[in-house]
Every structure is written in C-alpha cells, then in structure tokens.
Length: 104
Image 1 (spheres, rainbow, N blue to C red):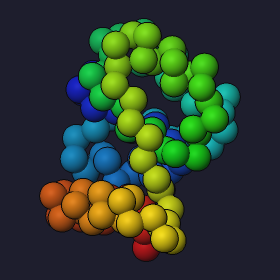
Image 2 (image 1 turned 90 degrees about the vertical axis):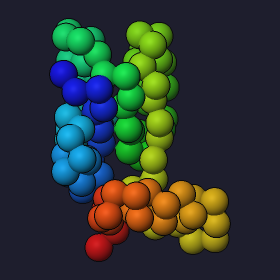
Image 3 (image 1 turned 180 degrees about the vertical axis):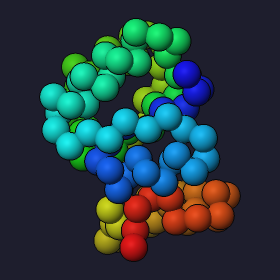
C-alpha cells in the first residue's frame, strides 16, 4: 500500500491520485469508517489526508491515530476570510503544480 492515502468526497480525493496516493472516495461517515477499517487490514500508510467535512468522525480518526498513522484534515472548499488556510492551499498548489484541493 502507498505511504499516503486520501479519504473523503470524490472531488477531494481524485486530485491526490495524481501524486501517487491511494484514494478512497467516501460520501458518508459509514463509508469513511469502512475505508479506514480497510487500511488496517494491510500495511497501513504513514499519512492519511482526510476531507475536513468528516472532522466530526472522531472515532474513526482516533482509530487511525492509535495505529500510528498521521491524519491531516484538509479543507476541500475555498474559505473566505481565513488567510492561513488560503496560504496553505496556495503553497500546496504551487508545490504540486496543480489545483489539487478541488477548486474549479
């Protein structure tokens, strides 16, 4: 399994496939829990990029972290008035050479 996995809505995870991450599209908290459980079955990735819309799925996030997986919540939608997140988005886009955070 790749060292990076992306879990979240389809528009969030699709862009991470281009950089070699294993992607797991999830539209519901239940689907997220199932995908996260699947990560436990094999060799777990070192880093999971998680769609921020699933931030309330604390049990799933904690289960991943207990396995030693770093879980990073990333926003999938543009923010208004949050300069720190806007700056991070800009840096990631420049580094990847693409608009990977799903803004169209």
